[in-house]
Amino acid sequence: MTVLQVLKRRRSIQRFENEGLLLTREMIEEMIGDACLAPSDFNLQPWRFVVVRDRERKEILYDCAYKQEKVRTASAVVIVCGDAFADRRAEAEAAEAVKAGALDEMEAARMVEAIHRSFEGNDVARFAMAVRDPAFAAMALMLLATERGIGTTPIGRFDDKALRRAFSIPDRYFPVLLVALGLPALDAPVPPRGRRMPPSDVVFHEGMGGAEP
Image (cartoon, rainbow, N blue to C red):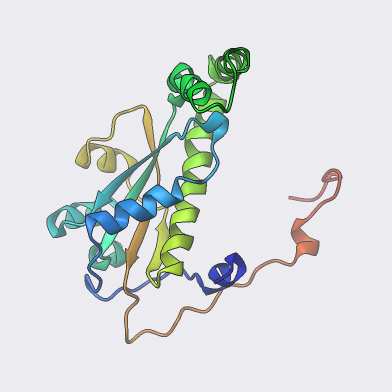
């Protein structure tokens, strides 16, 4: 299956068969591991994943997500979080790159300097990294699941404070979104794809030229 075929097949599933798939810990960890092939700033990999499969824990998550039924019936829900302080891994990541032969010592030192220059005292850059890079991994996870015949939907509506409290998420991590995985409801038709704006409406060349918002 090509990437384009997977993109065309993916739908945001609104109804799941109640725990209709057995998604083992190993299966989910394998998919997440593959999803982490997604790119990230300086390879800092500022993503963390909380996998929720237990029925009682899903009920808690269901409440955090404003009682969206798909959270309760999904076989698993992954809370995708971003690390706003991933730059603290700069030296360790540079050392790993040297060890792997990807960088020499001088290049590694420049990389560390660039990381600190990019994020120190720059809360906007930290927030962008903590949202952007985990979103790459979340999209990769949804495509990998689709390739394996698993239905998914991203969920961006939840109570941030309640979610942090219920799942012990430290302040340095931003809950970016939830990804629900499971078997699409057998009595529900495949959701139609929402209209996509044509390239002529969304593509600009060499600048936006004062385009209307």
